[in-house]
Structures are given as C-alpha cells and as structure tokens.
Image 1 (cartoon, helix red, strand yellow):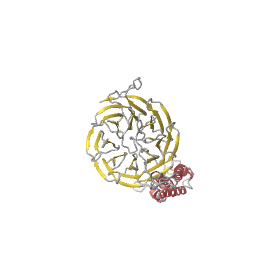
Image 2 (cartoon, rainbow, N blue to C red):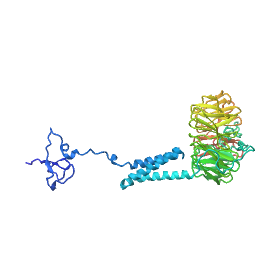
Image 3 (cartoon, one colour):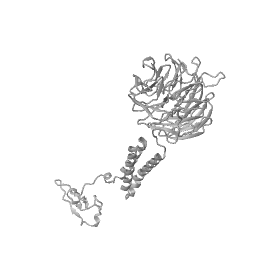
Length: 532
C-alpha cells in the first residue's frame, strides 16, 4: 500500500507542494536541498489559502509593467508631435515658436529619462529620437527658408507711377488661339478664346496622349501647345495640332490639381513646396522659388508678376523673369481654390468663409468679407462683382470695391462659377447647370445633369463645356440643351480648354484628349462623341 505524499509549504513563496515532487511548484526551489525552509501545510477547507497566510504575501501589490516604465518614450513622442504640428499647421510666430520650444524641451526630457536604460532606448527611444531629430532639422530648414511677410520684400523695387504709388498692371486676357491660365484669364471668368468644334459635325478624339500617370489639373494652351502637369510631378507639352510630344520636364515634386499658367516665354506651375518656371521653348527649368504647400491653387499672371495662393493661407507674388519674391502675405484659414485678379486687386477665399481683397502691387489688405459658408472652389470676377460659391450652399455676389454683399442665391458647392454677357453659369453640387442674372441673382434657366461636375464650366462662342463624371460635354449656351458628349475611361480633371476648334481635356485614366471634327485626310481616333 502506497502512502500519500506529504504536503509542505514553501517559506519563500508560500506555495503548497507535495514531497513527491522534486521542485517547489511556486518558485521552482529544489526540494532536494532539504526541507529546512519548508513547513507542513495547515490548509483545510475551512481556512484561508496558504499564500494569503504566508508573510511574503503581505508585500505591496505589483503594478502593471507599463506603469513601471519611466516616461521617456512618451516625452520623446510628444515632443516630436509638438514640433511636427508647429511646422505643418503654424508659422514661426510667437505661438509657433513657443510650440517648437516646448517640443524641444520634451525631447530633451525624454532623452534624459532614458539615459540609463540602454535596452529601452534601443527598443523605443532611438526611433522617437530619430523622429525628433528630423523635426529639429525641419525647424532649421524653416528658419533658413524665406518666410511669408506682409508688404513688399526689402531690396526689390516695384514699378511706380508718377505719383509714387505701385502701378497696377493690366490683366492678361486669352488671345486668339491660346488659353494661358486656369478658366481662361486672371479674373477666372471661364471665358475661353475658342472656337469650339462645330457641333453639327461628328466629334472624335483627334489625338490622345498618355501623360504618364493620373492627371487632376486642367490643361492650358499656349504657343500652339497643350500643356498639362501630372500627379507624378511631370509637366508635358503636346503639339495641339498633331499630338506630338514637344517636351516633358520633371518638376521635382507632385502636383495636386494645380493648373499651370503661361506667358510668351515660360510656364509657371506650383508643385509641392515650390513654384517652378519652365521655358516654353524647350521645357528647361528657368527658376524655382520656395513656398508653403501649394495645394490645388493655380498661379495667375499679373503683367510681370506671378501670384499664387497656397493651401495654408499664404499669398505670394514673384517676379516672372527672375523668380525673386516681390511680396507675400499670410491669412489664417486654408485655401483650396485659385486666386482671381481684376483692376489691380487679388481676391482669395478660404475654408472659414472669409474673402480677402489684396493690393496686387504690394499685398496690402484692402477689405475682407464673410461669405457665410466654407469656400472650397475658386472665385470669378466680372463687371465690378466678385462671385463666390460656398458649401452653405450659396452663391454670393460681392462688390469688388467694398466687399459688400449684393445678393445671395441658394445654390453652391465646390466649383467656381463662370461669367459671360451678364450671366453667371454655375454647376451645383447635385449636378446640372444653373444660369443666373449677374446683377440680381435671378435664375434664367436650369439644365439637369447626369452626374456631379468635375470642375467649373467654361464658355466659348455659343457653347458651354464641362466635365460630368468621366464625360466631356458640350451644351447650348442659350438653353442648356446637350449638343454632344465624349466618354473617357476616367473622371475628367478640372475644366476643359477650348481653343482653335478643339476641346482639350485631361482624364484620371492618364490621358490628355484633343476632341474635334474628323481630319479630312483621315487622321484621328475611331471613338466618336455621342450627340444630343
């Protein structure tokens, strides 16, 4: 008959273990060393467990392991976040500099906390320290680069009038056979030089060129070339008549929906954190100037100046020949639409619903107004009125001299309006087209649509052109009747350019299309537009 093993209690951990086992089941102490530290168990079904009765059980309850860690990693990460936030969403003003200083102190405190724990430093600290070092390098880069400032930059002379005041230069208007800026001109009126293709003919793709990647910007036409920036950061120029590539330039950064602008010598495009001037003749880079993040806003030309509103609210003016900064101004609020210019004044709208009028010669603020809703599209100027669409939704007409509201209509969205012959043409968010009297806001007529607009409409001759989904459409400017449609394999980017009997449109399928009547000698693609 085998006798049951005796149970003993370990005096180290308090666990009960049978003497038939070689080790303590609690702490692993070998029982072969003797039973001097073991005591018989007094455990019964009516008593407390031995581990509660043992003196070792009276020690302080252990905390979770993560609470035992010193605060070093948290300080490092918090410091990196603080500096990153200051660089992305602020400027080196008192607030931004203070946020950066706090971030640096947090980084130093975190490194001090982790100085004795090499294992933890290798596991967590070095990664956070590396992120912090990048942030500090960004601070140094910010300090070394030109900062936006109000008023003219010292040392750069502005053209002056006889009275000693900066002279306002004439607006650039689209000439025959050209469409040098987004939506036609610096006023962003939406008027294209045209003419468009004869709607009585069959409309075909005269040529189609692969741009090398998705295109979200609108094309422009200058010196017989269709010019388009791509999302991959290339600027390409295509012969408008033949579709032959003239040149292609790597801009060194991606383009976020920003349409180019051109004069008779150069093309200007905003890419990432710079404005680049490219030779119109051969695509060579002429100059590059640093800015805050460009976003979707497109440059405009004001005589010898290139003016651009960046996404984080800064407005810059550069000399078109040298690239030297003439002036810059910062306004709070994000800007997603292109600035407009008329009569020596630059107009911008931001996501806070604010509209600003700035002096084009020096950047001085003339007035500001509240449009009553978030502004995501651009503006348009005509006849002494500034037309703004908001997400309220509303379309607001403001007086260009004072900013006073003239009228408000209950239609809006993310696309800017176009103006011609006293009529405002607007594509509301739900689709279709609304045409209103520019003086009163009264609706003249509406046309239903089969999808959301991809960008503002443009007007050439007696026709209106716009992108609807993946389709380029032409409408009668008198009543909105559909004249023809041409489908592509991707969403139409921005607005078409209508020049010389052709319509140029970029698509998210990566192609730039030239639509027009078939060439008599036979060229062109087989795909045809649908009429009616």
